Image (cartoon, rainbow over all chains, first blue to last red; front, side, top):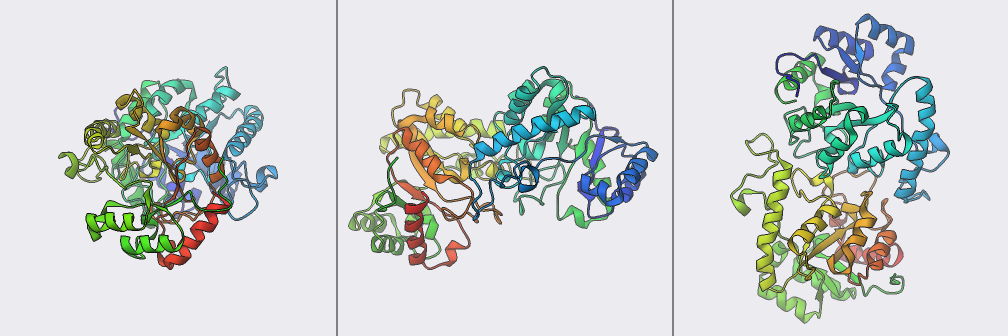
Length: 259
Length: 259
């Protein structure tokens, strides 16, 4: 297991963590100030400043990308002309098995595009609390089943993004991380699960403030050979209220002490 | 699958559903008014009026019990002198695997007592959103694994209580219901998952107001031979505000139309 206690070279910032404190250019400038050398931007943040300007800012700062968020919403009207399976009070379907099947089909479609762009796709299982309205891939096993079905030869084109917030509770987690192995482990995201959780979407915790044994999970992915960034992604009404430098200083300190 | 559309003989009321509208005596009187013939009371409601009075009220009304809620809290100080594994900010452990092991041991202890009292024990897996502070048995598979370990001969002493709110998202659910079989299926609880869910504990929905395909899940347990009550358990700040007769009328109507 890598020693994170002496520096933060393996810290990446998912830019949603500070999305209310500035635009992507300002976030990149703040990362440079704090010696953070990788980010994972969101498409809406890139669109807000324009793709060219975003690409120039990343290159000028010499930054790496640990990811690019995100595709999905496959079961909504917009994606496939199909009703969102979970929209209550409408005539939409409640068939979650069918929704999951649609998602598998959509990932298969997306792989063709991603392969041409030489971009590996990572499926991120989201916490079961989001099964109704955000994602119907809710466990690491489900995500890996899709990988095995669509990329049986382990070409590197498809894998998983594991976020401790979504997976820490799963009794099948450790064997599934072993099953994943190095080539399917494309990203590792950290934050924490607070008690109480006041808002299931936007009350995630800073690492160390909650109940997740983050070091144990990092140890499990590193035992498979994962050697990428530990990406901090915190959706939090509390942390969005704080100055960006305070957030980044705290991220760095916690990365060294509890991640 | 039984036809529920013409009457509500298989409706049981979990009395937490109307716990703010009256004490257990008043709840039983309301059930009698609405022809509800079974309840599942909570220990605190029984304690509030006294066990003798509660027992007399149930017998006088000719009611059946579909359950009695609840034991648990095995990892807290009170139960075993052990720290609650999930208490954040304290020195408590974050080892969820150890907490799960403690729960298995505690259920084993409880079985001796329950056997003497001729009371079957039902393990209710709770939604993964509660893994930090309410229950670390979070899937039907986990609950059945405990049953198989502690009651390998299927004596009827141990089984599961399945609540659609907790299990509807689980991609492994249908095979696990098959695995359970009739003798492990001790209770079936219904409510609904609202979108959005404003509060993960106390914003459960009335059947039909959310995204759960309740009939499909009832069909799955009945395919295994389950022939017990369909127990309505709704923790809801909204429904607790309404008059008890309105709540029970709605429960009966939805039991007939969407359960």
